[in-house]
Image (tube, rainbow, N blue to C red; front, side, top):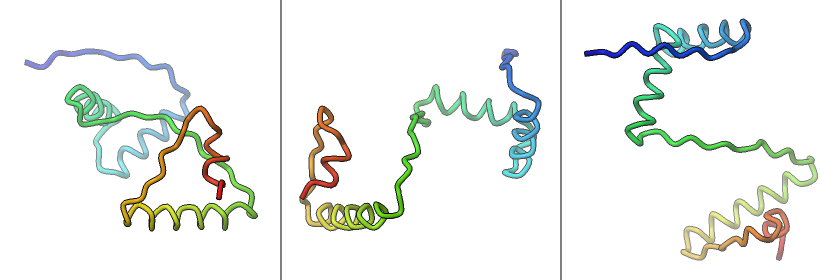
Length: 97
């Protein structure tokens, strides 16, 4: 038996229109279908929700970041990984020599 739960989420008309359009683009028949899928996967522990921030880098830092990532990948492949101390600034740890 299907239980009918009606969720009301206040969103702008613009967001609603974007949701409907995106749902159709990726093959869903409705926004409700997406919500149903998300809720089902969430309760079955098949979905992890996390919140991240986009970091902005100045152009001068991009090359440094690419080098740090490249070195990190080499260390990872060689079994040498660096543990980060979250009481220190993450940025300072990444750029330390």
